[in-house]
Every structure is written in structure tokens, then in C-alpha cells.
Length: 394
Image (cartoon, rainbow, N blue to C red; front, side):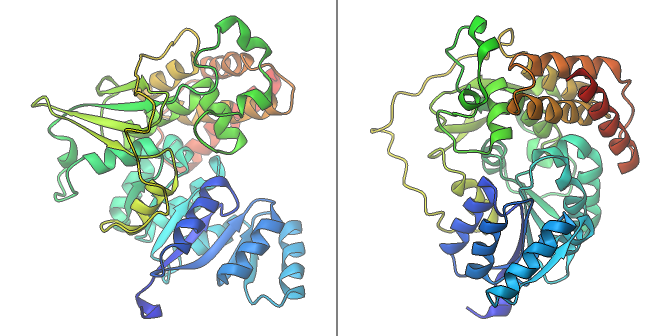
């Protein structure tokens, strides 16, 4: 294949679990080339990736880390240029050469480069849910104005995207006009069958031991509290233009059905596959075509029986907060997201208990009046206020 005809990709957060899976998919397909890789602090992994994929740029936000990484690149004779700062993340997300941006940086740090990609007409593979949770209306508006396509990579939203009709109309809600409801499936996390009384003594190691998915620490804790599903609930309401009453969460411990769509005629479409993030990544990368993900084929005969149940909102109240934020919108999702980032960080460092995560999130949400999320300044102000209050509560 001609080099000029290859899909040119920037991977935001290439050393995290989604970034590593993205590079695994790219190894399977020669019609994709890396333009830029970015990382937070894992310089060793980033260097290995640069030596393998030879991107034009590597980006680190921290200037000290960037300086050290530049020295490492020179020592090994790698021609990749190292850039530093948030502005550099925006540059490699919006450069005219780039066709596709994988947004897999964890947390609020992904917001600005994802917006830059949206304004520049890129195909955005959205694996960072915080970007749309914090600024759903703003991000979607910028994507429409910039001519960008947003393809969700979370397995649940990717499943819904696959089940909906093609984007063949510019009318708002064209894809969901015959949809009765969507169902987000959830594994239930590591404590689905644990008595609620035992959750006060949960350790970070136990919370990060997910039964089905191999994920980073923060998202693993969110899965354990079901806050991850609460954030996905908000994300789904924005991505698919649905009211919170038209979205449902169902516990499905086997993680084979990744989500489903109920239509007005009684039909239900579900997307199935192994619990392997390479599958939604490959779908997004190849869209509107398909190519190999490298994942094993699903063998339903060999799988355990599929089961389903309703979530226990008393045991996992963080999900209720997410549902409420999806109904309220405005700055409430940004406030909840910020509070949760601080409380999860405190839990992982051993400063608070597992059940205290919900208490802090609730208290922050109750303390801050919500406003319309009309611009980035309003969103960032709400984000910073929530973080400050959460830190004092910790």
C-alpha cells in the first residue's frame, strides 16, 4: 500500500492499557501508520514504542520528563522528535496530516486535545469518557462544526454504535428515531457477589482485580464502585441523544454481550464478542470498513451460561450519582467526574476507605450549584472547584 494512502494515527495515552491494545491492533494491519505517541510518565514503554513504530513525534506534558526523554531518544539514535506541554498534545491531535486520533488519556487531561481533534475534522476514537462526560454538548457541537466523526471505543458504547443504523442522515436523532431504549451491560466488577458489609475493608489491590477486563487502576476502581457505569450512562445520553429514562443498566457478569438496543417494533439487537478491547478498537480504526483485531473468535458453546440481573443501587450508589448527573447535565457531570478522580486517587493511595469514595462524591455534588456548560471556562471552573472541595474532604 502507498504510504500516502495509509491512515495516519495519533495515539493519546499510548502507554496505558487502551494505548497498548491500539498498537497491538495496528501491528495487525499495514494500512495504518503512527504519527504521534503521547505518555504521562512511563518513559521506558514510550521509548520501546517509538523504536518500534518510529512516529514523527512523542509528547510528554511534563517538561522535566520531556527533557529526559529527548536525551534517551538521542542516545539510541531515534529520529522521533520529543515535544512537551498541553499545546503539543493539541498540535499532534489537530495536525493536517493526521486522519485519526485515539483519545485514550485517562481523566480530564484529554479534554483539550480531544476538542482540538474535533475542530480539525478528525476521526476520533473516543476511549476517554471524561472528555464527553465533562463537555458533552460542547464536544459534539465542535465535532459537527469541524466535520469530525466520533466513534466510541468503550465496549458498551461501541456495541450500541454498531447496533444502530448507519449515519445516513444529518437530521438530529436520525440514528435513534426508532429506538425504544438502550441497555448498557456491566460485569458488576469484583464485588458483585460480595456482601455490602464487607466493602468497608476492601483494599486497592482487591478493587483493581477485575474478573474480566485488564484495565488501569483508576478505571478498575471505577468498575468496582460502578461509577464507571455511571460515567458511561452520562456518555451514552450525550453520544446517542437519549434521555436518561431511555437508558438502562444491566449486570452481565460474563461480559459477552457488550450492550443492546431495543427498537419500537420489539426487536432487540445486541453486539457480542470476547471481553477484549482490541475488538472495539479495530472496529473504530477500520470504520466504515472492518479489519482484523487479532482477538480470538467467540465460541458460545465453550462459554459459561450467560446471566443477567439488575444492579444493586444500595450497594453501589455511585451508579445512582451518574444517572442523576445524566438527567441534570450542565456542569454536574464535570463536578462528579472531578470529585471521583480525587476520591479514587485517595483510595488508591490508602488515605480513604473504598466506601468513602461515594461519600466524598455525594458531598461535593451537594455543595456546588450547577450551571449550563456553555464554554470551557465554565467547565474548568466547576472542575477545579470540585477538586478543591474533594481534597479538603479527603
